[in-house]
Image (cartoon, rainbow over all chains, first blue to last red):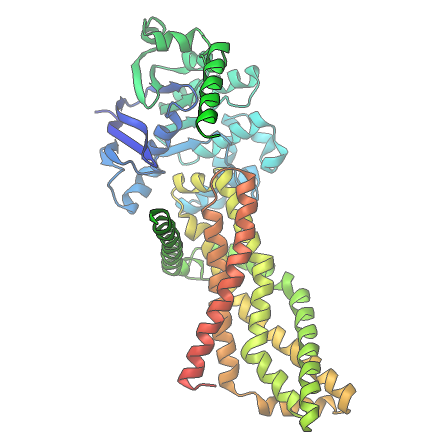
Length: 267
Length: 267
């Protein structure tokens, strides 16, 4: 049985359909990359998978529990098995890096302080930040912040690890390091990993399977080789980095003419 | 005509939505208030509560004290100017003593706290919304209301009445100083007269009001913060509207409570 299954997920904001009947299964232990351009709905899908928002219709079950309909207590329980590294890292600025990682351990377990210290050190060591625990988030570089966020996501040894745009705002070298970290974590802890990204090199490096989103629906879901070999023009456009038409002279001209016409009607 | 009804309807729904949000938040906070109590609750919440008490209460002492002294002088001078004409300068003592314990002490304190702390709450929570920290709390199975709001609420429930008492004392002392210089009434005699003028229900009604004011300030400030969507400009707007709305609602609450005390005859 798949660890996460999304069924006919429909999401609307102010009557505008953002996700249009998505169905997706994510198997235990695989790395699923949700790939898509800006506004494709990939972040919205992610927010629903981690239970931050409730959809208009459809269901999302995680380890057999439907998180769109379950009680708050059940949702809390499910959340204990998910670790999320947010796009902006979302570290608590008032706490040191150590305390950020220690927070879920202190509050959700009854472990002795010395054990928690040891576990925090281990998590920070895994992401290569063992010496930086005493610093505050604002003293870290962008890449270090993201790694600290990964350490915090790992704190409770989750079964599912989720990354929102891990390489956004990072230079290619640091972004590649983060890809290697994701691969290492998956290998070391046998986790199910979900990554939302628009970076192709990163997606092809880490993915077992890729789900390609376009305007709220899946264009294709398959292994990276299947995606690479796809003949669908919209997938090809994304992979081959063909620019859209919004900035072409013809499009600009057309919208200008439309504007002029509307001015003539309402002088 | 349709647009008029439409806009009236929209505004009504918006206000109902706000009041509903406020009530739901208040209910959630009251239910979780036990978590922040010392000994029986979560010790991290109590620690946060103590920190908040320092920020809301201790840090505001000089400002609240000075405001009360100024208001005490104002009330005494204005009162004396009128009462002297009917040869009743002595009643300035009653005016200041009762005016402060019942009304001015709690009200001035509430206005100071709403400007200092109400804005700080909305800015803090608003920033946490923008930087995804609130989302991070939720996926880490923390309830943002319990984690962020409840310590502030408990701290305000303790600190605001204490500040009100300080404000009462400062205002009444200012009245005494005025009386000493204008009528050579000794401070000892003044205090004796003050104590005969004030009755216990006066003090209680003032303290009950200050509890209500604390509730309004914390909940409006935090709700404005939680409703922040977008970027830094939204945080700025929420801070402004936190101060404006909480000051307004403090005055409205004051009218309601004063009317209740007046009608039930406890004054």
